[in-house]
Length: 175
Image (cartoon, rainbow, N blue to C red; front, side, top):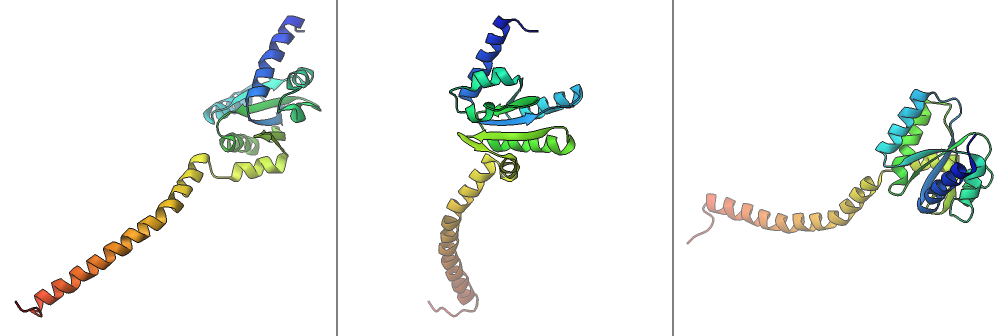
């Protein structure tokens, strides 16, 4: 059993995480093996996130007054939290991929930019393109009209050059 000072230290660490991280996914980790837990943590780190097993009463105290309070207010069972301050889609994709191969890992709720998500919304978030993918699509949409304009302008000059070249070859122009 932990001493009171250790519990206060844990609450302080968890409080910092819950107050500073805008994107979190709460999950149940019951019946995961050590190897599966290692794989989960590795996948989350690769997605740019962190992972912590939480004790319900400590999480409730640490979450009070933070944006994560709706997540931590009524925790039941064995819980863990995956969090990131960069890309929630990458975190959701990593966790969803892990959950498909490990049915013991189940989502409970999520928090993205202050909005609480249910399980279906977390899975929908995982199906979205990554931040880089969205930016690439946006740049394509912005760049496409300019490319079409340049192609049209070049087409006129190219067509004129072809007509002049054919006229010269057929001696249609007299000097």
